Length: 304
Image (tube, rainbow, N blue to C red; front, side, top):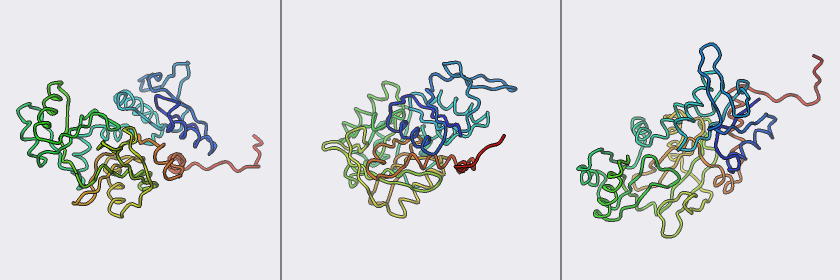
């Protein structure tokens, strides 16, 4: 098959691994820089063009690996490929709604999944109400546009919470206020879901003096045995958001497992390094199953 990886950085570990995994299984892999793709909208002959003059109409599938800053264009491009009959490992609609932290929490809540108590408001006068809504300080303040732990602040006192919330609001930034789960002790779980199955899981632990367990913030990863209820939670979260591939972040609390976030372009380096599992290969296998692809039998000849 011809498979395109829609991303930004060809040197990123995750993108390299996906390219390698596809090539190892006999597919023609192409790295496509999202910014260098151009769309032709035409009911008769819709096309995607690339910077070198290629017309990308012969792809069988695409694997979107869209960074947050490129969500709008990346989803538009993925949607265009889908409209042309190209299979997308994660569809544009699923990516878009998973990227919207508020909307995704609303969908997960609607699906009956346990999430941390969260508050959202638009008016500067709502600060105290927001703080009380989530049980007071300490609490977490999250920028809706943040990723990889950036734009996430722990406010340990009410005064600090008021200052952080009002500072973000003065910048007209959209933010969530969320209860702080003290008993988690700076740890969370990342469960990697492919086709409705948890194929790998790690525990991420924050660096000393840090509360964010993200690997990009200095956190460390280790293999962890997940509980059945955590596995079910991750699988259902991916299903609710319509993601065939998802990195589901879960935190252990006194109330049981809580969903923190669902990532539509989860990184592979931390989880592959810790578990020694071929996560990239599982992603390629998912495409093969969806398109009912079977490898050619070695040794046969084509007389045509």
